[in-house]
Image 1 (cartoon, rainbow, N blue to C red):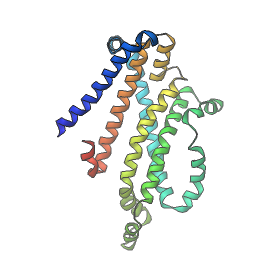
Image 2: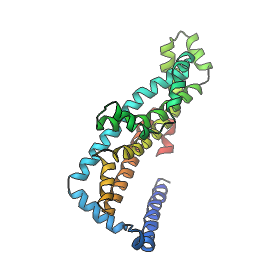
Image 3: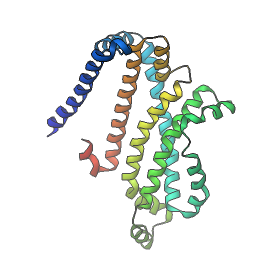
Image 4: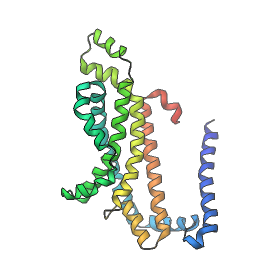
Length: 251
């Protein structure tokens, strides 16, 4: 069964390569679409130098730091909002007002308050990851049956103990979903933010485009996709240890 799944996943990737190759043969001369072979040679050339790996390291650092901060803020705040009505009344309306604003739309405002370019990118990634984690945590807490916290309190558990040992474990599946989605959105927002900065994979893609180096554009795109895939897989694997009944789904 495991080998069959791996074969199906490999077939999916090969199908994408096949469609890409056909598209370059049909539209390549008109649209300057680079072929898989051209991109492969461009990747080898880029990988031979230090520039690409420096951008990969910088972008990865930005994503993981901002994602970690978003989780450290979003999960506790979501637990409190979902559990205590007074906290929800004081915070949730304001958060709901801010949530529909696209993270990249914050770029001018963050520039006005004189944040550095590096901090602007991190804040944009933080915002992209924060709201999925927050909302999924809130929904997870509200999905816990009230009988369980009530039973814990009747056995002498304090509110903090009830939140930690009853509510949090019950909300973990929803939190798990939120952090996985947040990691993907963090990479999406990273590229948008770095297009306006002067470093990272987003800048690498834009710089290659303006220079007419179209194979390198695809190299940058594939690098972002691969890093996002690996990052999400890592989050899923780590989350599965906290939510053991989901391990079989992610194997």
